[in-house]
Picture (cartoon, rainbow, N blue to C red):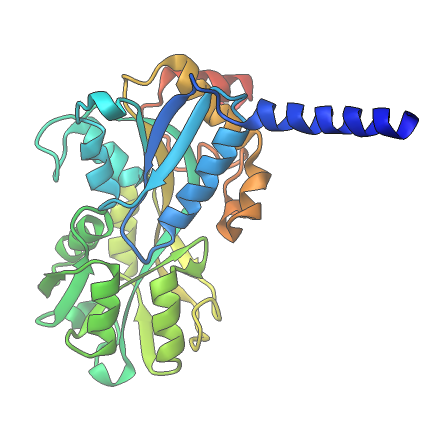
Length: 323
């Protein structure tokens, strides 16, 4: 009888745990916009959605979706959709800032508010060692992939070209298109990015395939400084030697933080619940994706000085002694 009773107690405890973490029928169903294929943001977004859902006390259910990227996600927040009224999205800090002030590529201020900082994204640029391109100024007159429309990399890259006075022949490709164009030498150079100092999947594959054949570089120091001074969340960053397969030199370039964002239609309670569930349990993200170790409460406001924060999220950060 004692063993039977123990089994029943154990089973009841297990059922209580499942019921306590699973979303209820009345849970707020929230769609999380990530980014373009090949960049790992969808996989990371899926991991974060799982952690938020599991730790919301059954009040919130988050599902990730592939999108066009940062600026596309800001635009999606403006849509009125009765079937999907609640949305959050991933965007780089500069894209959130452009939306808030109504700066290009936006024609007017957008309804977008930051929730918290996630992890760093560093953009460098690459070409074949035989191309003759050694530094940023060598891009003049060259066919150069600046990024994919819908993200933020293509905008910041164009700003870098403008600040430096470099007149390249600009191409707009998404991640898989860009990697293929570089590999097949259909362009002279293209962008290449890393999440938390680890190349995004499509670029990891490119670097491994062409190991030892590629040269990596960033904008010149004066241009990096201008970007950091003028754009929210952009900093000088260095990709350490060995971070890119087959390349054993440091690469100085620019970095920026991925942020989690929503709009003013999100209730204070839901915004607070999302942020608390994610950042109080951030260590759980690594169970599903290694980049999760860079999403921390300590860095939850990094690069967000110039951004407006949702009142519900602000409550959490104030309670945490960070605002």
